[in-house]
Length: 438
Image (cartoon, rainbow, N blue to C red; front, top):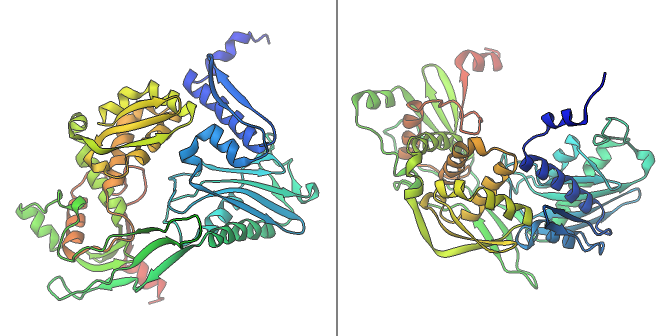
């Protein structure tokens, strides 16, 4: 069978996707060997050129830019048969996927669910569910302790002692975080708040969750915490979702009984012989998404000039991507200007992104990088809904819980958030009775 060379072109993706794939491959090769200088150019544009001085952080700056790289701390750990080195992100720099987790074993790029779990364990208590750190890890070990012939592409490997590698990765990350004085503070912990009936008096205890980096020479104290609000005051993000006054809606409120809040994350609800657990963030995210998506033509009109324009360094590849899709960002009310070959300034954005403009731009660029331009409006509205929705860990008042539940049950596709996660879990009375062997 004769195959013409040109026939293979029909299997290629768009030029942007192919360029991104090449960029990703070359950048990971450069990260695997910081001691070798790599350069990547396309159409007479130089995307990056690494120094080849053996310093991983300098290589990162060359590829990703200073602002991205400044969010990482160096990691160094050495044992009898295994050594781990690289960089790990600070807890406040979290991502929504594992795309920024790069793992090398003996300078070979690999994928390992086991090591990914070890990374999660290293950050346990510092990140919320579905938040992921960014890491670049180099694991050096005896070649006899790892089998690279598990997969034809040799990206999957098998370790002789998986439990040992798991512990090494977990403990090296944990010790680095502790060395840099990150810790999880849990003050006045009370995981379940409840009341007996909608008319009874009730009291909620705030679960304080904050990341604190202790002051040390050369560092400034940074504190991240959830805002504690008056019990009878609706949050700003919930004020726009007032309870309708129609009789059908009022009667629906009487069909369920709010038991309380669990872990300041889930709303416990009893309704028609079932116990419901509602993810407050996912539920509010679905409500806001449906509301925003009905008025996508107004997104640009809601844009506001920032009192203090936000500047940020990006890689040349990101700048190139931004230039090609500047019109899409404008459609959602985000006005970005180029300050130079590797720097941008955000001058205006929708008010609902207040304080998270740069993070939103980065997330939207992640989606465009994956060639999701066709679904950009859906994804942009989902990002905005996610940013404005109440978060896991926030204490809610009775009124706020009623507002979320009532609005959720009248929202289309209420069982899932815009990203596909479930908003509600149901446990029937029979299932509970079986669990307790009744």
